[in-house]
Image (cartoon, rainbow over all chains, first blue to last red):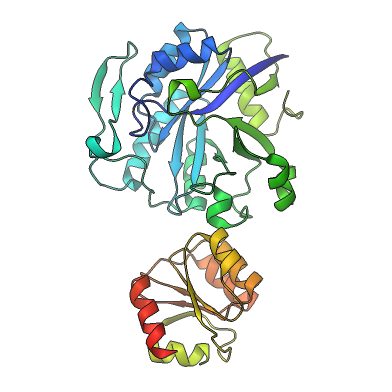
Length: 250
Length: 108
């Protein structure tokens, strides 16, 4: 059992709002410098840079997690994390059916850059990624889960795109066992206002769009890690998320 | 005006009307439920495109006279069943929110 510092919500340059310097090697290099061990890539409605991200994390000795920040029809942001890269890529292909077919205007929204593992730009995503998909939250949850995703509502303390702001309260369905707070959240005040939050496992992630916003080594989980391998620790992370490990934040 | 009278005059579709004789006391429109929760008031008709079940929680909490789903927003069957159970009038129209509000303004 060791303490693993994490940041499970980071955008790359594939998100139009993500800085062009958020390349897969820059993200993993910065995360390593900051002392993180587990980092997830969660671009808006796409997993398109997850494969090179895996390669970059391997170079920097980090444990990668492939993910996506899905925008539901209600404009709620929901983080979907996948234990296997291939699951993320399969879900990415499926989600295209539900994305809004509006072309990106890079001069207004920013570039949507697809990279290889050496940070070379190998393409651009033509359709604007962040807008709401046509999937309401329950359907989005069901569909992502059927592809193996573990889902939690993102930055629930934020009025825009946070589930509490949009729905007023946590819905009964889907029943999220994990919620994500941003680094500046007043968790105590939120738990007082929404007592059901006390029963949830809490994560704190950066939602970084710029390199300097990636979390410092401040948020950690105690995870079993013998016999050590990156895949083993990632598996333990998912066991923690699913409530199979017990315990709480380190 | 009652919810039943409004429904007939406006040509709204009824998804659930357990209390058609309820008087309508004004209108509130919005989709961000946390915002609506703090601002709508008792007896109002609530116009929204949001079809999440939490719409009913807001309607019930504030004792609104009815919920009107505008823009032909698709209501999942659970919300219709639950509206009936909770005694909430749930209506629907293909009109966009602005036109729905104009119509309500002219009728009420």
